[in-house]
Length: 325
Image (cartoon, rainbow, N blue to C red; front, side, top):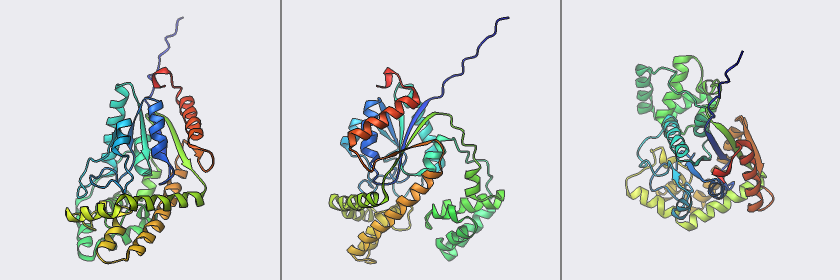
């Protein structure tokens, strides 16, 4: 008796390049995307904001002319943006890039955003409770957003570390998940099935901690030379101010504190460097918990060596053929 073999459709291919800030993701991603006929989707929660270019280390116009970039400059700094919005938009871009015969890359350092796409996190399973939301918003209005954030720290300290105190909407949602489901937002995220709809190749960049910190300090000095302070001054002139989530981004809150007289310039720069080192440490902690990451140490060696090695990893993992080379 003859048997009919059903050929399963292949999953769409997706490359992810992640790592802490200042690890060298931008330069490597540009060269890799050029070699592999790719397009880049930014996996950074702050690069979505217009006018915030230097402090978020966006790819320059020249770099974007080399390789198309997506999910950059799609919001004004006073507009909201959520992980679920990122997930929906990124998935649409991945499908479009694939349909045009190109290879999609997600490049960035916002772990939850990237993971939500890689493993199709479900964000709508936990119902909303409008009355609870109203009570939490009233608490924030009466006692300040810090009081609400402290409440989240008590019930879900890990999620609280990933949300700024002024991001009231996300704080309330995290509290609401715990209130409605009995699980913390952290437990809820950890309980996701983490089965990917994509043929994934996730490359994680890592390096010696001391060298990473040196690169962070060098990058901040470079940002300041390129005009970070003037960029923040222009944002203030346009009416964008401290309580906005976008203005809590590294570089912006510190320079804003200086411009408003809360810190000296030297204090602001030192605070920025310290907070960026801490941020990089949190990024690495998140990425280390992710599955499927192929780690590549960029502490030693030169750019071309790393480019060649990572290219070989991607080509082998995804079984790429001539159309991508």
